Each structure stands twice: as structure tokens, then as C-alpha cells.
Amino acid sequence: MSLVIAGIKGYGEQDNFYEAGVMKELDHDGKKKYAKKLWEEDPKKYYEWKEWCIDLDVLPDFFGTHDNPIDIDESKL
Image 1 (tube, rainbow, N blue to C red):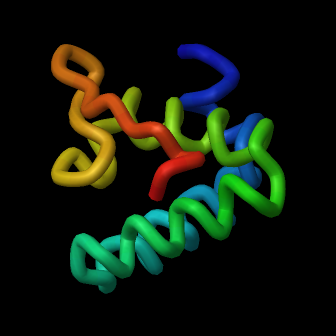
Image 2 (image 1 turned 180 degrees about the vertical axis):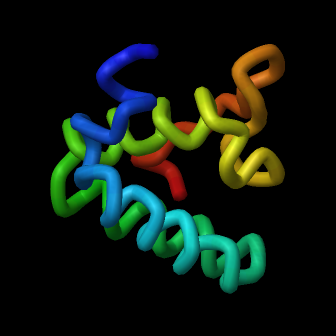
């Protein structure tokens, strides 16, 4: 199990789940805005969280999956 999956990276295990829960409640445009906000606040934590989401197939409609990630340019969201 990688450190990212264990929740040690990103926002921490509890907050990784919290941010994913917030995103699940948003429509696609809302997800884009929220992702950009997280990215602008702390790109390192955001990218670790994004990897955590992909590794656990959380938010596959937005980030894709480990086998089929969706390419997102956060600077253009």
C-alpha cells in the first residue's frame, strides 16, 4: 500500500474523504471550480489528493481511474 493510499499524503485520510464528498455533491462545472480552488490553495496537497482519488477510484467521472485517468489542466479550469 502506497503512502498516498494510506492517506498520509494530500489532505490527510479524513480530509481526503471530506474533499471527495464535497466534490461528489457538485455538478461537473462545480467540480471544476472546486478543483481549481483546491489546486490554487496548495498544488502539492491537491496533486497528492488527486492521485489518492485515482488510486482508490474515487471520483472516476472527474479524475478517471488508475487504468484510464482523465487528463486535466488545472490551470485552465
